[in-house]
Length: 296
Image (cartoon, rainbow, N blue to C red; front, side):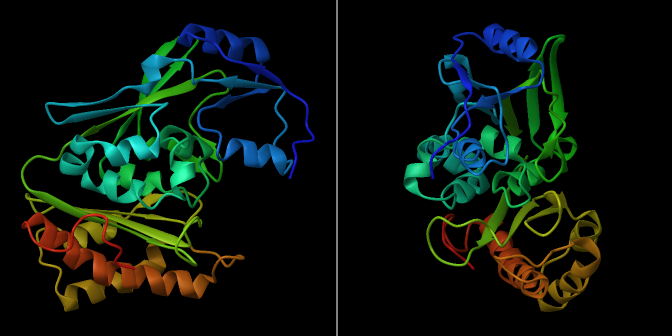
């Protein structure tokens, strides 16, 4: 499918140049990172920007750095760069596990985590993982910079807290204290480049806390505080998992669409809990399946 819509293209080499371009365009511009979502939307006439502002000349947004338990992911960092990072794999294994299931190798060479959450489609892969790590998102705008929690970011399908004259510059995650283990599960129709029918991120901490987030089963990725309270400090045996599964109908709001029915999504999220909770507990104790192993 060709692009029938005409637009201008700008490639500033400084962040201030990006912000100047956004201010000048008055909401008629879109920022381009990897473009794997954005270009598809333009082709399908879902959006029609007057200007594309390309971030790829900004080396400051390509930084991927981990020190003292803090991971900094620049807005230009691709999913394959996350996959190839030893620090990500060892200290933030859910990021590693998620990145390996994003689309295809070719897409991962261009697609960025920042772009993924700026697209804010309900099935975005990064959202649930950033929620359980309680990530901080860094935004630059005409009046300076501000930080947002991942919980504040998603406002609705394709809607974020980002203003038209702002740009997401990076994401920060802090390594949980003590032992921790997790599991990220993604349900697709087939192996390969497919959007999630449902996804679940689980992170267990040594202090007894269990964090859970879901994707593709609500208008936005969401945490499950009531379920987390049920699981806190308890071993996820069959009886406890059954109690957690019974809560799902009150926590998530899946829909029926071309990829799956409401009923199928609801059932399979229960299966994700049944497989993911024990795997997360085993991993926290140094056992269980290797990160990256497909459990669903």
